[in-house]
Length: 155
Ligand SMILES: [Zn+2]
Image (cartoon, rainbow, N blue to C red; front, side, top):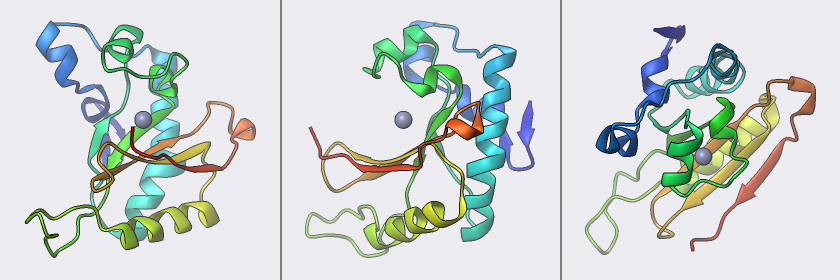
């Protein structure tokens, strides 16, 4: 099912955890409306600006899936208000031989979002301080968006 021109619902409901444990991870109509808004307000403009397909690594999460993947209790992923997207990788491998996140490009994406997009939170997340992803959210009530940018330190 298509949400907007470049995004399909399936990209937001895919979950390795849900597949493995045979858990249903389907949003309600309300939550689908929120996903459409997230696409229209945040993801489509970002894709258009940088002319690159966006890979969603985590979109909608049912409360059970959210718990199993260790999401915070009030996670916006449960409302269809948030998605995690992959960030561009450097074209040059680091000393460990792996191409990690291009933080310069990530900074350009974030700067552009801050200046042009009505988002709620934009969180630069990492588990190893080398590979990062971007958590982007948009509230169902657009007037409640906080325009917060957060850089999370690795745990
Ligand atoms: Zn997230």
